[in-house]
Image 1: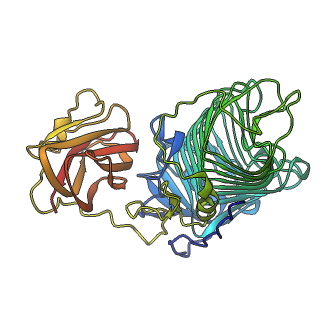
Image 2: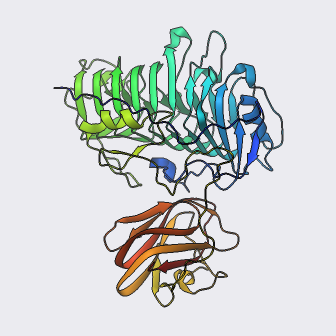
Image 3: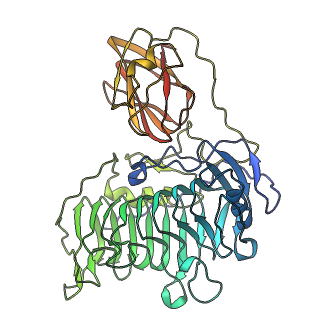
Length: 515
């Protein structure tokens, strides 16, 4: 019997709408979009933080988005652009500047880095206007809808792709978006989520892709095999003919996705590609996994998937479905941590979390959707700055003084002991942008508050976790520095784990307190 799909929650973003001058990007001091939840391959290669730590502006037109990009000090100056309203051809023009390279017929993120685009207030819709990422890195796109982008007919935009990446793109996180078309190639539409010409380290999470002939591809031809390291999780693919996705070369990880009405084929692994396919729910679909339309084989590792009313064609020529009883023909090593929801609850979880306007709800592997962590502000509106927390140290004794310290690999010239010496002029840095440092005691010590202090010249902490090293339990998570409180824990070792950052963090002091 089929598992019934739970009714979608209608939770909206908590951020309220404020009036902004139409077409003008407004400077604010509010916190940036939620980046603490970045997952999958976008956490690798130094991590993906978007515009975290930079200026936040508001835009209600495509021209204003381009103005915000062009108004930066440089093409790599971090910026978060909060978008509200409908972005279309009528309000999107080319803007020139030394920090941008824009075009009139699309939102152009070209030859730039360190940018977040996030929908706020009553929502952001890119209507018949695609988002083009080219020769760019460290990009976050969150909580927006992109619809009906055409490559033929009128108007045309972005080669017909809702979101398209090409030419040396690195570290992109697309999260809680809705990408939709109104037909296939004969109606003028192309792919919803395409990556080609050396695009790597991408995550698509908690998103909806629907009503299109083509879900998306990784690699534009059998010879374009420089793409990969892409994660797809907790997404809904609904009423898609094929390419969910098409993978040419490289590695992709698909977990906890709900595939519903894949009409011709689904995950198409070919040309030497390797796909790890974990705990997905395939429903009312055909040939959901295999190598299709080519004689150049691809490979897959499968586990925990549910096939609900899935039909399989016979193998013939260049049509090689993995079913009716898919088995693994390769193994894929995944370098990041992830927690799987059970496949049977995927339709319910995805229905409540995936797509724009769902309040950025996520899953923690318990099959119960969770709201964003309160330490992660998510999209906010101008005039609603979040409280960064106290800048002065908590009252009481800093338990780190006189304790021990260790951690993961450290940068040259730094020391673990520098985080417990009481001096902000010395510091520990990870070897790279991520890593961990711990404070430890010879006997169990109760801790309920920490204060993270950064040294001068430090990079920005995009996301971290505080762990009870004894048990592995997560005590708290967040971004940036400052004071964090949590339920009292008796432990011998507490670990600060930095999971992504912009630049190299310099932890001057890792202070711990009983209360």
